[in-house]
Image (cartoon, rainbow, N blue to C red; front, side):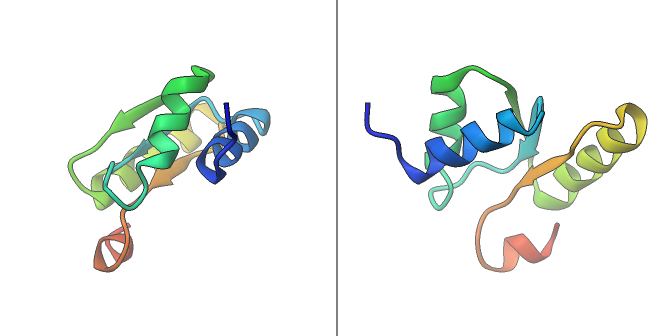
Length: 81
């Protein structure tokens, strides 16, 4: 298996203790969700929009003390987070 950049990012996030990622899956970031599914080290919770995902990330971090991660699309959508 060739390690893509998405695979390496997923590996680094899991190694840092990330257990959950919230976000929007898009054509621009699809390598990361694919790597998350392949590695099975944490879960990806899809969201309808970046702002909603960011609210979930904030809640996770505040309630559990865990690292919160938001996966956004590109362009204007990233600004919604």
